[in-house]
Image 1 (cartoon, rainbow, N blue to C red):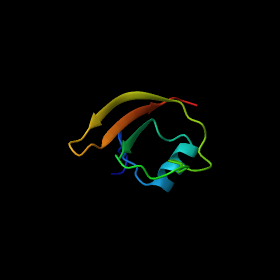
Image 2 (image 1 turned 90 degrees about the vertical axis):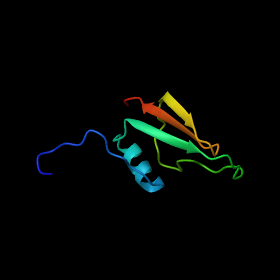
Image 3 (image 1 turned 180 degrees about the horizontal axis):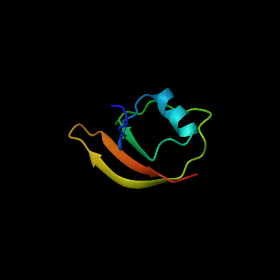
Length: 76
């Protein structure tokens, strides 16, 4: 792969996503909403992630009721 560039890279995992958000390396974010209420005060991203403006690009509902929402991340 020497000399090649990737246009789209998939990043997964809470800690990894938080670290990418902290340094501004994401331009799109997809959040999956599972139809289960977990309880009060459960943060999606935790502490240390900067306030980030998002714009909805689209959404999709699966047959099981999972909702995937894709956001564009506004430049800082």
